[in-house]
Length: 471
Length: 60
Image (cartoon, rainbow over all chains, first blue to last red; front, side, top):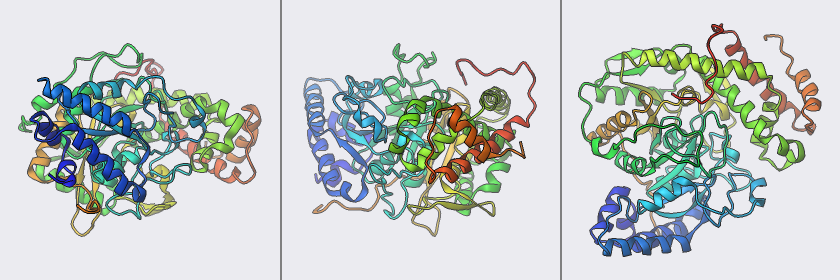
């Protein structure tokens, strides 16, 4: 089996072969390290390759398999956004400042869960500074590039996660999503991304951005990989006081139960009027395949986006205030000026935004009495050329950076679970994502829909056609 | 908040919050402040009943 055959396929296929001893976790890990050696110089996904640890983890998995145990993610190579603690590695969170910190004393809780499930950590990956980003650009570490067109953005802020998975260097990556940072790179890089319900997964030992809005979740090349990772990651964690107590779902078991009876709607107004042609085509393509027969308007959704914006800038800047006061010069200029203005937000604006969040949650609960799934674009357009500063939205020139996330932001604002699914509109080499939005705590519904789309070939997440040298 | 003066707000709050804004950064900080004020205006313009409270632990 060539390195290409071993590595460039969904994680669940890798795990099945490792469990059946058709290939060893060690071989898969070495293939991933070779792929990084061959590709990452061009794409800039990885900031910390943990090769020694990866070989040790792989050897342990192989020993466990020989000993008769069959961990679900056996030998699946994965990366984590570099805001996750990795024992012995400095958690840089995309910043220059945090790399002065000592190495992490222990793994993030979700890294421990992945290890228990048999996955092999290959390293930490690039991200926008302190996650305040939708581009994947970073002045300190360089931009993570889009494997489907390296002149373009990976999307952010989990940019390195998008790059690493779309290029095939790893099968899966863990990212974070505060306003869209899993869904945006999934859209730009043509991947499946799961932003679970707010409070579902432990955030222990990850660097925070906005405590009110931060989520963690996986990015992968198949819905089954998302479901398997999600199943592995759910557990009640006493180390995370923000986590909410809910019964865990068994997402993989119900993945293929189909979509019969689901009431599926397309999000109208705000989304349709601002979406570019590719985004509209992508939603229509998915809606047709699913037989979505209705359109719904999300109440005051433009205000929901605005409120998320206010909470994000004020809460994150309050966290950063001591550093902004003493060493603003050490920030990435593209995030620095947003943080500085965020430190000046009147409290009444912030509280009004938090109160509006409660109102919007109640309205959306009512809307979900009439539908089970809402479809909306993940981004208004496909991946932008790197360095793009302005875009056209509904006929207006607007700053690119904050507006990439306008469709993702109102959904994470109230913590609804979303699977971003990748569509490949005709006439372009660039993918674009569609959000499959489910009611709170029903990740299983969004994953079932994604699986049905994947099985029908309506959506797909191929490895970008950059070939390993010699394979 | 249509008459919100972002430049004046930034100049005042720079001192209040003990920040130091380099001259070269100022236009961008002011532009970001203006964008936040526009977002906040959308939120503030929507009247909420007094009993709508922020969620202390947010549970979707």
